[in-house]
Length: 140
Ligand code: SF4
Image (cartoon, helix red, strand yellow):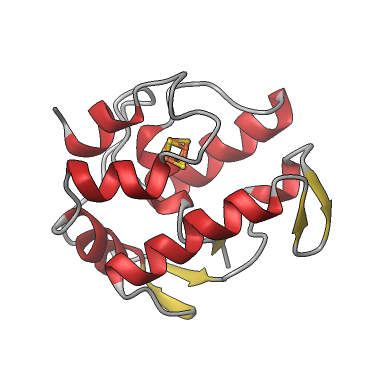
């Protein structure tokens, strides 16, 4: 079962080949492909009738496993920032912990997100000013 923390629902769609290490990128691409996340860079697409379950966790997840910033279980070098971004995702999209259909989570997020919400959630992220995640998430 793939574990996903809330803000990675955005990062997986916005991924364009950047990452904290080679291993991290390999893991990111593996998970994106397995979940069939819509991603322009990898040219992967989600199918409307595709039902894949993921486990939503409010701490370190499957993508964090290969991240050099992971200090130990549930502890990240950027813990405060990352937790704040997750908390905003939980609040805006009423995300709950536990096993769910990935496609339902996508709908929960992408039917509601707009520029204002995106900026509020992502402005604390170190990638916010470096890569154009907004373009891939809002398709603007
Ligand atoms: S700005 Fe950061 S948190 Fe937001 S989608 Fe991009 S990488 Fe993910």
